[in-house]
Length: 505
Image (cartoon, rainbow, N blue to C red):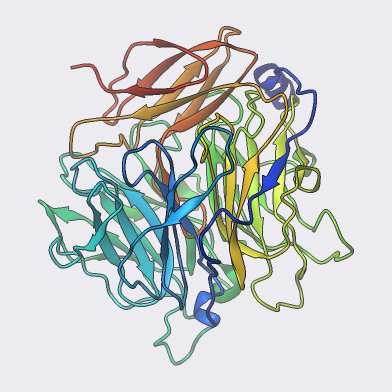
């Protein structure tokens, strides 16, 4: 069967009567939060989405650049009510480029890995939206680099996660900035503390990292997306084995691709259990299909290149940053959000560059819906997240930007399909089951796969339930392959709820 036929067979589903629609919520946040700064904050500017107080409503921590990072605590009163946040309390964190939520110490409360221009930090969460710097207590060497990317996983026998940190330009290199990409770092735990970081070299100016079991071999590997603007020549998109730490090469099937790499999004689009990868860039965005562990560039006709603004009269190339898959209309087909925005005043690229909302179609292609959906913001967007902030089963959207306030749009899509969300819980140390694979099977026989990861995107990520659109289905079966490879039984669940699963004893 051809790929086109396979995609059609796997992804066909109910059509919605109307397209997606979002309502802007300009009063969602108690203050206007902007990601400002000069050259060192042209990149970064992401958000972390997490439930920091256990009330079931996602909260937001936003990078602040030269201004303080801010915590916004979800105060939305009911499903479907206008989304709003109260101001939370954080230490005075400046120079922040990105933040990622994960439970580092295994106590059940989400912590924060904070990347900065300067010393990176590990912040312990108390389960009540309080965060304390414990970098020294945990033996974490924050360094003094310009850090811009992070991913994490739990390796066998470890009581803390292994952290991969991507560094950008080495500001101390007198020959820079061009050709002066810094080395990246791997932080491995030694008991309950971290040992000295190990260099991942050479570095090619990383802007996104993702540890994923992309070959479904049971052995996660580290993908690094790099910015060609500064490595200039000789660099490429990388894949590293973690143990022993070593790069994949052309000799073992890793094809060299060079692009202005900004963000990574990963999800299984074809239903075969292998994750596809979206790489954002200046100009064409690059979607790669995963054919049982072999990556192949998607044809242009797939509709995911999003190479120029889709509205307005600026025909120069687009600049993509954060990318994220999610089922916006719950039709059981994944869609794709891409944050867009000029680096600053780069004349080769579009100045008015609206964010993309690429809707998945039954034939496996994507079609642009950003303008009709109401999210065609042309601020210099950077980070973002798709999350159900009001608890109504529809994914809402938050996007951060340089020199423009943090923005939120509430999903008001009419006629959206049914949904389920899956939350995983394990005993310490890996309480959020990072590395697990969730299989969701609907009565029509289709199976949807999602991997639990920390990393990807641009400048931030989220920890919380994994959202599935079900289309017309009112029930589904869920099975989890837990970290370590043990596969649990099928669990039947009815639509319209968050299902929490733990490994059987």
